Image 1: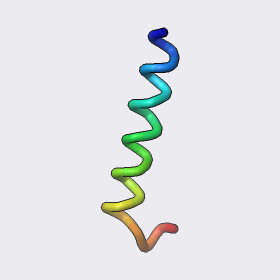
Image 2: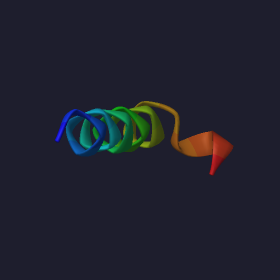
Image 3: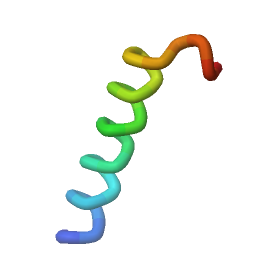
Image 4: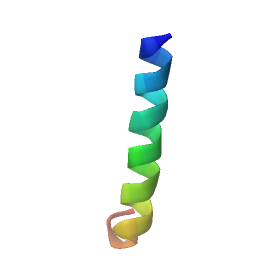
Length: 25
């Protein structure tokens, strides 16, 4: 359960990072 929650937070963080730094993608 905690692993799934951690994975979701990590994925959300990656999404936000991709939105903030679009020039890296």
